Image 1: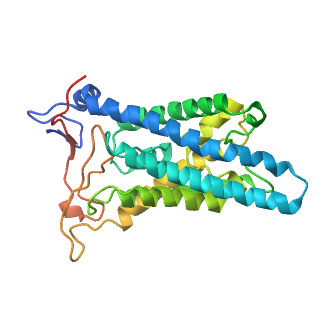
Image 2: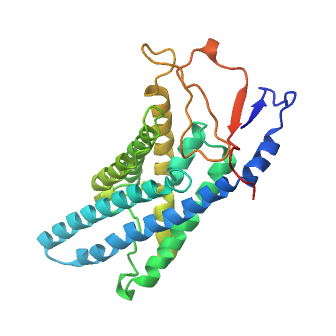
Length: 309
């Protein structure tokens, strides 16, 4: 295990390598590239299964019968909630056998970056893999579905009389709860990572905001269908809303639900999220007193049993 210390002024300490050297070491790690591959593959199936389960229901909303239209809308919301929630839980569970729980979502990755649970390089490559996986999943869905369904392949759009600010609010709140659940599943006090709460959070958020925004909560999930169907109306809502909601959800959990050593009945411990691949930053929590705060940042790179590329 290689530990890299960086002083507040950015000077290297004796016997320690610099930040650039640590980034190079990260690129040489085989597990880093495995995690990037998992992000691509799992996001591909997440978009393929989720969008595929909802595209056929959306067409039936063109009927003139109000009762049938309402039933079709409820069926679409339920289909989307089950498809996206179950697929996310399955993909997260399967990824544990490969490299650790994937993020599946740029909003989750940005939140982990803001709370220093992944580094900039890891976050950048994970987001790129997620976006490429979403594009690939949407492309596969386009190829396997009938031509009459190609106008609605899971494209997210602001619906009805919903305002742009209201749509932003729905995506913000839904992603806040999703990222909050992700952090709770990574809690070090638990025996293992639990993907089911994350899937349930996605299902709940979908039922909450489906009829208003299409319930994205994931910029990559919206990007793939938008590119394939060339539909960009109000696309900014599905980037700004989830990312800001995810950032606030991660920061809120970090500063309100973690029990530090100053909490009665708790013991000092360090957090290391199972999904924080590459150069994960370990710290002693946000509730530590100022006196206990170290004067330098310590980055830990787990190099054990990890062959170089």
